[in-house]
Amino acid sequence: MVNRIALILSLCVGGANGYVAMPSHHVSKHFLKTSPSSRRSTQLHSMYQNHPHWPDDASPSEDFSINKPIFYNDFDDLIALTQEEGQFWENPSAEQSSSSIPSNLRPTRTSDTTISDFLNARISQVTKDSRQLLKNWRNGHAESFGAFTINEQYLRNKEENKEDGPDSIPYDWVRRVDIGQYPRVACGSAYGSIFVADATSKQVMGVARGVHYSEHSDEYANALDEQLRQCIYGEYDGGGVLDVAMFGKNVVASSGREGGVKLFKLLEDGNQAELMPQGDVKALIRLMPGALPIVVTCMKFDSYGRLYLGCSDGFLRIVSFPQDFIFGDDFDLNPQDLHVTVVPHWSDQAPSPILSLDVSEELEMVVTSHVNGNACLYSMKEHEDVYNMASGRREQVGVIGVWNPFTADKSYARSVTFTSKDSLHGPKYAVVVGGGNGEVWVNDIYPEYGESKTGEVFVDEYVQKFEPNHVGPVISLCSRPEGLIVSVGHDGMLRMTQTWIGLKNPKKATPWPLYGLGGYKAWIGSVCIDDEGKRLISDGMDDAVIVHDFSEYEKEENSQ
Image (cartoon, rainbow, N blue to C red; front, side):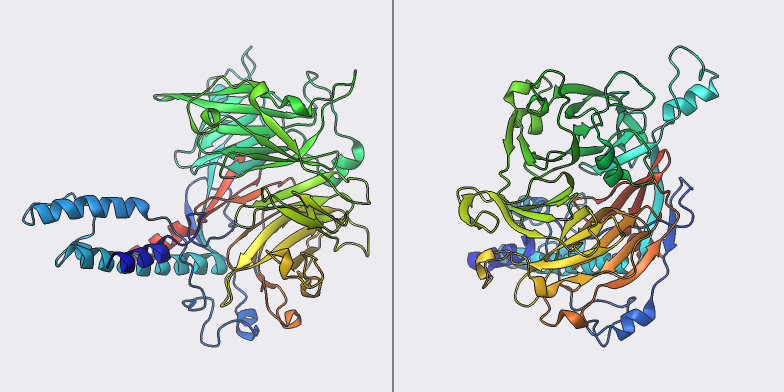
């Protein structure tokens, strides 16, 4: 019986990431409203019906029997079950009205049988919820609302006629956003400020004002050269922060045009909170007299609290923090305790500035996009020698593959993300790249590059192009399991596309457009998905951060 329960547990828990196979985002025509409003996006039913890889007996509004995601974390439920299970068998007649175990799942026979039945019922419920969530993403069913405004203090001063006083602050605009542990969200601004807010209470919790270069301040020098600025922003440079990343509930990193990375931690004391500066990453500061720090164009935390930096010198860097700072209450970070690793760039080409990056902990890989159009894939596996195609040698950690889909017109690779899809033969993976010319390309990869007959990690014969193109550069990409891709460009259009990864005949499996969401401003710069895969968060709405919650739509439908 123990082995049988262990098997059920292994099915129940599923993936190391601890979440149901999850998705990406949406904006309604009524996005200016700050109050929640359900919306139903336009669906392209005819495309579904004609697609060769869509189930014959399924439509966008029906259940998806081909999708059986079982990744979820239910340890809390199991702990509660075993505790209350023991209490029940010690005193079967005890009142358990406050039990967290649903009444239809409470033990009625033997303890072992009850645990087995409970887990089977839980697996069934989680699978059902996961399929419903996936259906919501594919159909564009979400509750969309403005999570918060960064001009809360400005508006308060205006109401009190203090906008011209000594403590007055300017009207500001959101520039870049990232999700920590939801509902915590961090964002930068056009005036070089950093904000941390709670998307549920719709309130700003902490702010560090003017900590980065902006055209409104002379405190910092601009280290961003014109060519790189053009690649990052195109014709729509809204100024301010280059990128921001958040870990957990309180750790924030940000980069500005003055170069380097600044660190912050949110200090909470009851109902009070303050965003405390924690210094800079000193390793990014050049030691030559008069030299400006290295510009960091993009960054991302992994679940271990390591910070990955894409830099203007073309090198990928990894910052490791003291555990007490990342996971504890330590607010006295010593910059000397930071460990910065520069990942080798083995290539016959000179390093090209990095514009975007993504991290796959499941693959232990990082992918970067570059000004020269390349997408570079790095292995992060420790103590493993990998064959480096660029150098022709076996190296420890470094570039294991290079792909350039923009050789025809020499466009730069503006954005990049990993994506995945389950299959009968295990999960399949791919890299998606968005270009400065509006194109989006997807290419399958071999998770174990030893599987490739040529030693290449990219599967060139599986390259596919999204249609139609974006108008202007593809500023940001993100993805969710089952091959769903969210792309956004300077055309103010956020698009959801279904990709078909790992199929042997890719010519019949071209990426399939699901729907588009208009109304964003040209200055949109970020789209991201929370760790639960339920919410899509974006900027591009002046001073507000927008949330699209695909799980809330499901709850409203079921309650009717």
